[in-house]
Length: 121
Image (cartoon, rainbow, N blue to C red; front, side, top):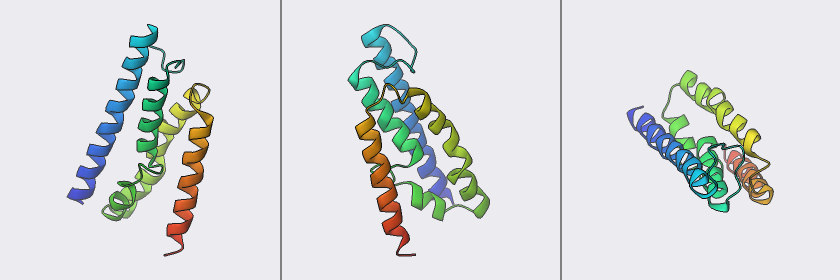
């Protein structure tokens, strides 16, 4: 459980740092702090990577199965459901600014890999 919680903390801290860096990069290039109005491609890419890490999307899914396996049932349930709402809301708020092709590819790859790995169960 200690390894799972440490891995979860490090990955989420990295994703939060990327999220903050995306906002700072957007403010640097455009002069506005509103993260829902991203106009620079670097800011959009950093935000996409941060949200993908927080949601556990492919290719940033490396931490998710190990954290769920190393946690108790209630903790895993909390991490797999409730902790996905804030990044999903942020994704919905910023989706007009993000690359729809990249988001679609991440979603399709995540669903395909999840289904393929589920066949082993």
